[in-house]
Image 1 (cartoon, rainbow, N blue to C red):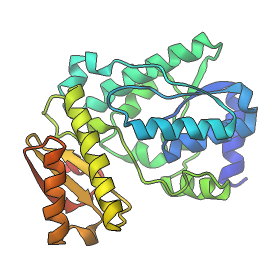
Image 2 (image 1 turned 90 degrees about the horizontal axis):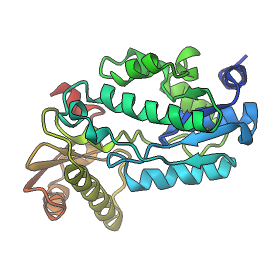
Image 3 (image 1 turned 45 degrees about the horizontal axis):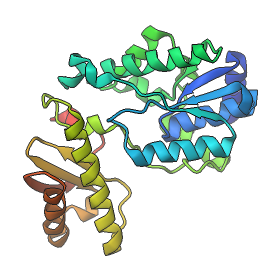
Length: 266
C-alpha cells in the first residue's frame, strides 16, 4: 500500500479518537485521514487555546475542521501556570506538551474517546530539539505518521494528493518558540510577538513583497525579523521593518534570513 492507504488503514485500526489538532500540515493530515477511515462523526478535533497560539492559526484550524465536517473543540490550557514552562529552558516544549496533551486526553475522555493522536512525524522523531515527543510518549498518544515512517515531505505529498488546503502551508510553531531561551514566557511577551508578526506580514503585503517564511524572534529588547534569504539583505526592507517591530513594542529591530528553529542553535 502507498502512504495514503497505509495511513487510512492505521487510523481505522486505532478506531474512534481525538486528534490533537494545531492546524498545521501534519495534524491536518492525521485529522483528514481519521475522517476518511472512521467517518467525521467518529473523530474529534481538539485545539488547545492558549496565549501561545496565534489567533489566525486558531481560525484556520476551525475552518479546516469545519470543511471536513469534524466537530472541533478549543479548550483553554494553562501551560503558562507551570513555572517550568514559563522559565523557558530548552525543555520548555516538554512541559507544554505534557500540559496540552493531558488536557486533550481529558477532553477526549469526556466525549467517550480513549485514543488521542498527534501529528508527530518521522522527521520530528529524529530532531534532537523535540522534547515534546517524549511527553506524548509518556501520556500514550498515537503517532500514526511517525509509526509509518512518514517524513514531512511524505505528509505534504499525501496532503496534496487529497487536495488539502494545508499541503504547502509553511511550518508555524507556537509563539513561545519565538522567544530566546532563558527569557521568561509571559502573556504580554507572546502578544507582542504575535502583534509584530501580524504587522510585518501586513507591511510586506502592502509593499507587494512575498515571503514564504516569516518569524519575529524575541531576543529581549530586540525583535529579529526573519524572512526568505533573498530578502534579508535588502536595506529598504530592513529599515522599514525595524520601525514596524518598534511600533509593535520592541525597543529595537533587526533583519535576518529565516532559519527553522534558529533559537535552538544559539
